[in-house]
Length: 455
Image: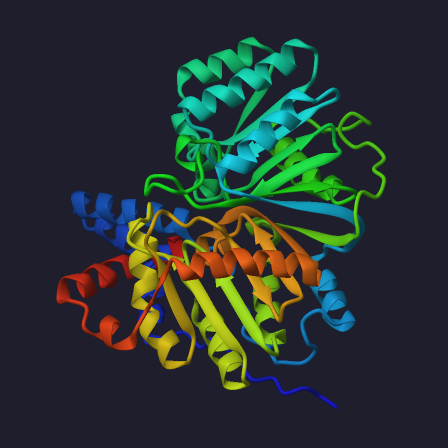
């Protein structure tokens, strides 16, 4: 029997207009016309817009077909489809520890670095100067001087604030530091492709990933408003190898060096009961594995979906799938960071979409105590994804991301407990309150929507 093929996510009129504005070809044609007409200032402006539109162009588009509700989340057909669709299988024999806030994850990461004997590999979007940066710098330098190979891949935009002192100390101690996608004239086509991954792998046997970078605002337990709320995950077992492979691919792309040998990829024995899927999402793949993973999980839900994400800016396809989930009886809750955000564009674009989500029955909550930076989605109390990916087009279409997926009721229960704890400290978004927001707020949302695909 042939399945129904009804497209989802038909672009709204505002989206069609916005995408038309950001096509680089019309701007190039206008620039050529003004150049021929000897109107050089206008030509320069049009060619500048051509350059900006070319750099900002998305590498892929959301899927619209094949998003019908079929196999339930957690079922063998669902897991097989998830593995086949993303190209990442589920590896058994892993242990995953949930490390909540910098009070837990920074000491654990530093302890792992201090115990390194074979190798240390780090891929970071944010590595900033400060107390935390100094602590990691000291630990890495000590291991490098002891003869342990230390390879550090930093995003050239996100880690631009590392400071000369830390960079010099790292390189002088023998650490290899490389910059991902530096801004150069010959890298014009990749300006907008950033590595947003947060990966630490020690000796090839223990790995860390999650939402946190290396900076002082992640310290503590998110008690005062200036301490960010976040979660990292410590992995032991065979899934550490594919976690490191994402680093190895970007290290090769950046430096031309192949990482090899038992000090990086040792034989790993089983360390726990969990089958873990490590999904590396990249715009170079042509279709975002992270986006596909999220959408497949949403359409497979039967009872409940809980999403926590600081930058929740769903496209039309995601909105349709979430609203359709509610229509078939799924309880959908989304927890988003509130006023204490570090991204004005994401905040405005997210809030602009509240109305259609609320009308569709999606429950929205804002966390105002501090910056909520955790990224997770829980489905039907059994399936869970965590990692570095935000629920927005930047993570799906522009960034290098890492997602961990697993089907385990105990792990899902532990993550649900964290979700409920944060939910208790949040405020529900009410339709009448959103409708009564002022014209200044609406104007900001409209302006921000021009860059929705870049959030």
